[in-house]
Image 1 (spheres, helix red, strand yellow):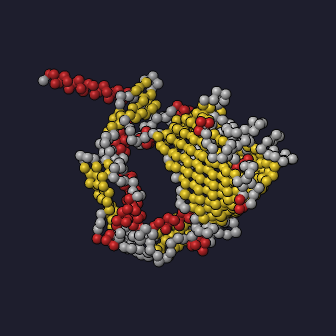
Image 2 (cartoon, rainbow, N blue to C red; image 1 turned 30 degrees about the vertical axis):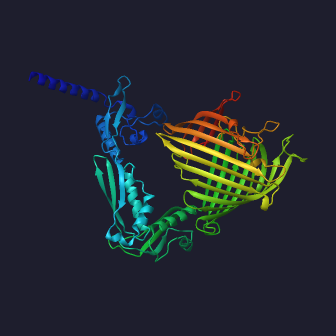
Image 3 (cartoon, rainbow, N blue to C red; image 1 turned 90 degrees about the horizontal axis):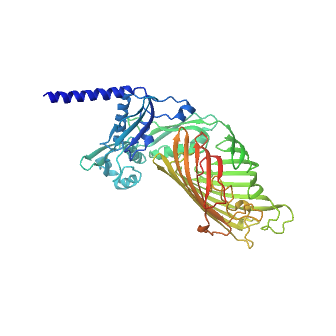
Length: 611
């Protein structure tokens, strides 16, 4: 009996000591928070759930951010929050505990180490939309097949609370697009605690078939009501379809006339009224807007631009844009654009664009004036294509002893160009300035001369694909670009501005701009008819708005058309810093040529990611 009391006393004493030890650390600064065992959820996701967060020395110095102070009660609540977030992510048996504290009594700081035991996740077994009497008039099998392509939760996928909310919305919208404006979707989960698998059974109450009613238009001041009515892709009295409301809103935003567009069906769930009236509310953007910018880069030196836009030019959705730019690479550029949206359909735009530009590149100097007439068709928010007719007069400054030009008596070489350019862009990467996921694919085909009349006849093709993938807290970004030019002329001449060049801040970063590839006798870049470039970059957060990168680049330019010598590739490796700003990241890169002892490293300053 005495031994039992001694043991209980010892336990009580240890408990008091441990509590006193924790209490002794109250109000110590939390210097760092580290997670162990979090295999699925990224550390920044978990940190967002905590009341106690780490504040680095640089954050305190630069942003004057106050440090968080240790509090045992907040720690306990944080551990509960972590378990809760894991449960919403499908880890029902997740646990979180605080490892022994790392304490510096002299500096009064504490480092937290949180041990996470995720456990096994709940996986989806089967997904079904249950057939009811209401659904007998619907081709349910066809709807199931269509919806299944959009559902996030499928067989074998980890169950997530947020995912099932989105899937309920997907199913509801599928029925709303069939006229069932008042549809209600619920679900049952059949969870097996032994296998940690769940079946998802969706129940649908369709409600009545509905139709569109009258549309009220509010908020427009300069844009005429009749013009807005022409933008509606749905009609009064037609079958209700939610996707047509979304398409109307998207089309109106694409006009760039409005800051706010709301297309709201005025449903009444109590009365289930039909037809359903619609309220279209718009808030117009300023008729005249301007942007002025200044900057500096190691390649273009000091740069500045002026961008003026006037909306509603001569009524409707037409816009006028004036763009002026100056930099070391572009001493002057003046461009005037007359933009007509909805050229032959709501998703098409035509532009008339007279311009004059002077380019001063390492390999050439040209002055060009002419006109571009692009017609763009937007298939959806990710995919668009543009067909451009162009007519240009170019004057090239000739270098002394330039052997590629014959019978040129003056130091200027004028020529005319005319042709078409077809380009297609697919871009589902996000976010815009610093993508963390998605693809960006661009393809281009330029046909100069031939049927269009020009001093030279050639075809230029290129493709550029970029992929962004989350890698823990960072991002793995990759890029592959290839192109080729074929001439139909006996002399094989290609204008200097249409040749390929490689090297520089957005290319192979161990070389200066356009430094790779063929050279003239003077040593200046000659350009080539073939190009191949590949880039790999790991981007990772450091502190505050600062992130670091490590990169590897490879590529080259060749003089012959579609001639890629893989054993002749030039490589560069290096690293850099990014500072996020509202206009994009400010970029500092240091690139080292690989397997080339004669080259020195190159340093670049610019705005925006390299790709």
